[in-house]
Length: 206
Image 1 (cartoon, rainbow, N blue to C red):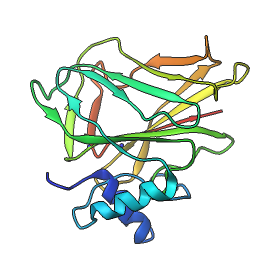
Image 2 (cartoon, rainbow, N blue to C red; image 1 turned 180 degrees about the horizontal axis):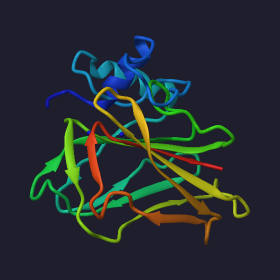
Image 3 (cartoon, rainbow, N blue to C red; image 1 turned 90 degrees about the vertical axis):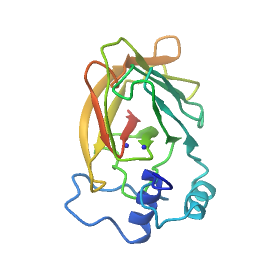
Image 4 (cartoon, one colour; image 1 turned 45 degrees about the vertical axis):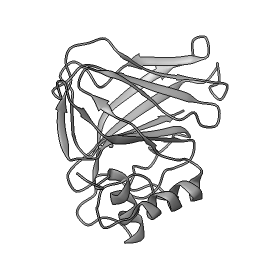
């Protein structure tokens, strides 16, 4: 995928309700229930309905200028965390959401790339349409849990949302097989990376 009640979650709910966002989407939306927030005319009831439908509830999550770690809600045997560097927010913090699921989050979110099987989806968003630049660091994104199979090679796909809630692939990483039950990769949110518009979306698949 993060002013008021204007969340990326609402935008994706709105896209689902209105049969898709207008504009040329860069990726086919996934099937299933809707996902994160962004338009003020969508109430908190819509977010609640989404959470009740999918069982994958979004968590309020702040982005701190000093740096920190996003900890996603554990889901179906996979726990995930995303460390991030200090950044251009400085001493401030931005409110937002994280969400994680082992099924497609739906709405206008990216589909699992052809030829892959979904293991986990996650999203990081800010309440405002912010542009945040991350400082040099050596942070990590980590996945662990019994759902990860020792003999299976995993790939992480990362997508960034533009101002029209279309998703563009920002990165693809081959993570290989789990080591001691975990997969680790350098964090995207460091070394000059820019988190802009409405957030980043992650797909772990094999």
